[in-house]
Structure formats: C-alpha cells, structure tokens
Image 1 (spheres, one colour):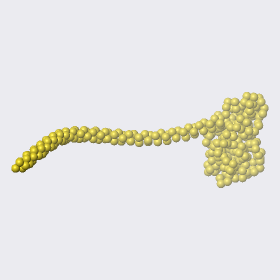
Image 2 (cartoon, rainbow, N blue to C red):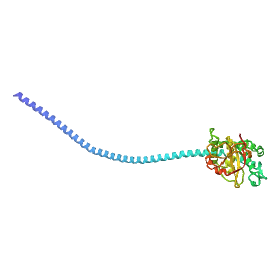
Image 3 (cartoon, rainbow, N blue to C red):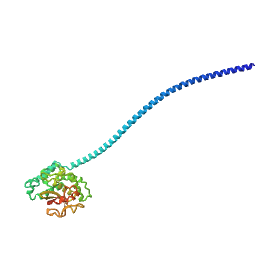
Image 4 (cartoon, helix red, strand yellow):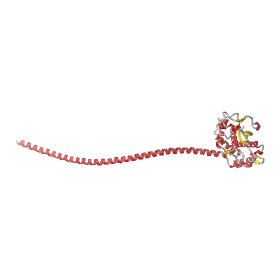
Length: 345
C-alpha cells in the first residue's frame, strides 16, 4: 500500500508539471499570436499605405509618360520640320555655291575680255591718223561723196582684224602714241592675248572641223555681243566689240573674221548693198559647209581675193543652223567690196 500511494503522488507531480508546462506554452503561444496579430494588423495597415503610395506613383508616372509622349511628338514634329528646313537650306546653299561659281567664272571671263583705257585710246589714235577720206576722220565722212569709200573702208576693217589677231600693223602709230613706252608691250600683242582668251571660251577642240569651228564661233559671238547702231560709222577693233558687248554689222564681221583667221580659216570682210542700204558680212574660203546650206561666190579675184569658192557668212546668226535656214536674207545682198584679212596662210 505504501508504494502504491507513492506512485500516485509521483503521477500527480508529473501531471502538474505537464500542466504547468502546457500552460506556459499556451501563454507563450497566446503572446506570439497576439504579436502576430499586431504585426498582421500593422502590415495590413501599411499595405494600404504602400498600395496608395504605389498607386500615386503609378498615376504620376503615367502623367509623366503622357507628357513625355506629347513632348516627344512635338519634338519629332520639330525635328521633321528642321530636317525639311535643313534639306531646303542645304539645297539653297548648293544652288548658291553653283551660282557663285558661275558668277565668278563670268566675272573672270568679262575681265579677261575687257580692254583698258590705254588700248582704247590707241585705237582712237589709229582711226584718227591712219585713214580718212576727204580730210575727215573715218566714220564722219559722207560716204556717198567718195567713190572708193567701200574698198578703202573694207581694207581698213580687214587690217583691224589682222591687228588683233597678232599681226604687226602701224608701227609708226605705236611709236608716235608711245604705246609700247607706256605699257611695255605692243598693241597687237595686247589685243592678241585677249583674242586668245576669247577662243578658249568657244570650247573648240583639235578634232573640230572648220565648219564646227565656225559654228562654235558664231555661238560665242552672239552670246557675247548684241546688235546696236553707231551714230558714227567708226569701225571697231575686235577687242572693242568684246569689251562693249555690242556693235553693228561691221563690228560683228571684223570680230568673226579675226577669230576665223586665228583658227586657220581663211577669211575676208565683204561690204554689200541692197536698195541703197549697206551691210557687212564675212567671207570664208571653203568648198562647202558640210550638211549646211550656204550662199557663195565661185570667184572674187576681181576684188583682190584668192581664187576659190568664198562662202558668205552672216555673223549675226547665232549658229550655222540658223544661217542655213535664212539664206534668203543673205542672198539679197550684192557684194561691192571685199578684202582678205592679211593674216595666216
């Protein structure tokens, strides 16, 4: 019995210990649960704040995105406009560069074909002293009072063409005018340099035939010179016509004859009449003008020209094609005087 009672006491002690331990565990768990509940409540509360903050940030970002999208669209439009403006400006710049180059080339061309005061006054000196009819300077005389007017005048015109092609003419005039003393070169050399430059602007090649050279010279002359009447019938030297960029029929003819001779085409200047009107044209010693129609004289030896066919060229036509299409305007003129340019072969 003693032992049984002791066992019962031990069991009670164990039971109480277990109950106490369980109680502690339960209490601990209760506290833990309370802590978890508090944390949960806090987290739930914080979650709402976080969500609200995130929602606010999302809204702000969306607004910023919309604004940036709008700004991008505006910038893209501005960029497109600037690109278009750049292309337009670039095209304008390119055009201006081309125009400037053309103007620069034209300026250089104009300057290279222009004579100065010294050469011009020398020409005036020659005109006043080399030739006059009836004691009056050439151009101021009454041509109809002098039976040799045409033959004398056409000879002087041919000499003018030869002079500017580089032939030595009127040496006494250069001495008396002091041209060489003042400039250090002869007047015919000064003029010849200008005429050489004029030839380069015709774009003539070594492969060109005489007919092609004539056509290019006509194109050049008529691009540079316009027809204007003179109040006095002064016959201008070729470089004068290039400088003034205008002249009458005699001016055109003297200039064309000079350029033909410099290119190896034998030329003469002819004076013509029709119904009391006078006119000047060029004659070239060629068999034909290839595929172009032409007006010619089979022989002009009675006027002192070499034997052979002499084709009449109207230098106021801008091309051989235009000349060939208007032969009736050339045929009506009757030759009254002619003189070869005393230059070359």
